[in-house]
Image (cartoon, rainbow, N blue to C red; front, side, top):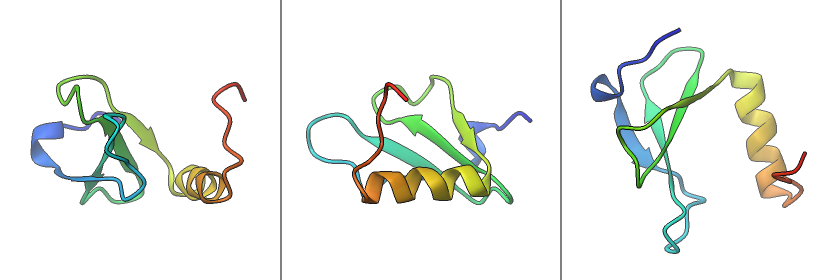
Length: 69
């Protein structure tokens, strides 16, 4: 499914730090969570289904997420 990023309301992830590695989450999409790089707002989006987004957040909160996984 295609999403027009200009039609979404974007907010910085509460897990983003001040080191320039920030994510923005698009609000207002039913049954999906679009995510983009805050430094490249015209770049590609990652779109998570609800279960995948929940699993990702759980792993981040538990500090068990590995980029190599």
